[in-house]
Length: 400
Image (cartoon, rainbow, N blue to C red; front, side, top):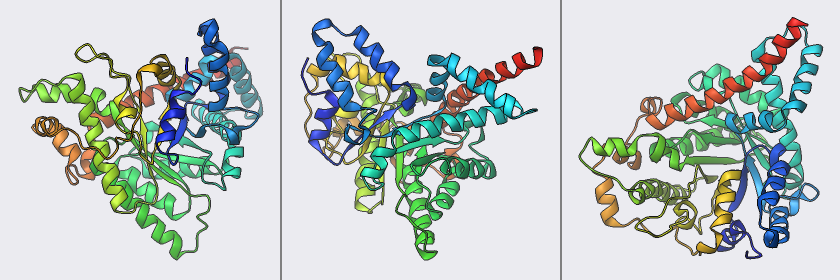
């Protein structure tokens, strides 16, 4: 095992790039212990140093992780890993709030998870003069079309800690909220976004919100904006292969990955040219199976290496990268265009063509996009799982 972690080597290609932890900070130590337990004995000390350099709770401002993204499935893992503790915590909330219903109980518990995670990154936030150290907290995915509810929740989340960045969905209504929050100086992360039209609408909403903020003299010292590209969710959850089959086109693993990469590369280029005042954030990366007998590792990081972006990495993905670290040789590829034959093939599929064109989708069409609907349902299911967890404590209290 090499001394340098694969993510450390990725950042060496462009020191302005950022690596974020894609899960609740509250489970990081449990994950480290699991990783070390599974490691080969001869690799254990090197891995321990690597994982400490990723995030050291004693010196968070000196470690590799520059921020955090969370979502309902990731927060649900907090209950799964530390269930006994949180059951006791919820019981305490019930005692202090007689008559509370399950939804309000869930929301109070969720905010506490966010707040504690944010506190773990305050050192990064303060030492970097508010440039890094943000933790993204998502508004309820069951409310992605409800402007009033999203705005109310966003304000509550932002008030928890100065380094909380609000995750707002890429729905038509979501972009209205991003504009409003930006005008208030509240940092935002555009989630449930998969297509170039969404990214560009978000950029416009941010710029318009900033103009209002500056006109009103709003303090923007603790403001940031990132636009998330949920890469593999576009290709895998949105039904790209099936849409292609309907046109008599068979897409390989490489074709699907190139579709995702092409969208990201174009967005990165356009936003850079148009002086977007934030960064693209890459998530939902995958480690691909061998193609033509050759392990391609993870094109999502390899072919986008060199970009001034945020790479947010969940525990499972980091573990997978570390296993194949020796196969990954990074070089600056962000400016390299997708192969022409790939693009020509993909552009015959309307599902891709619309996602790749600047005006390929209207804001109304964002709300019915297959990848958005599938992801919103997955996140809503996890949210319901969190509600069920706290409701079990409520029901238990009632039977006593």
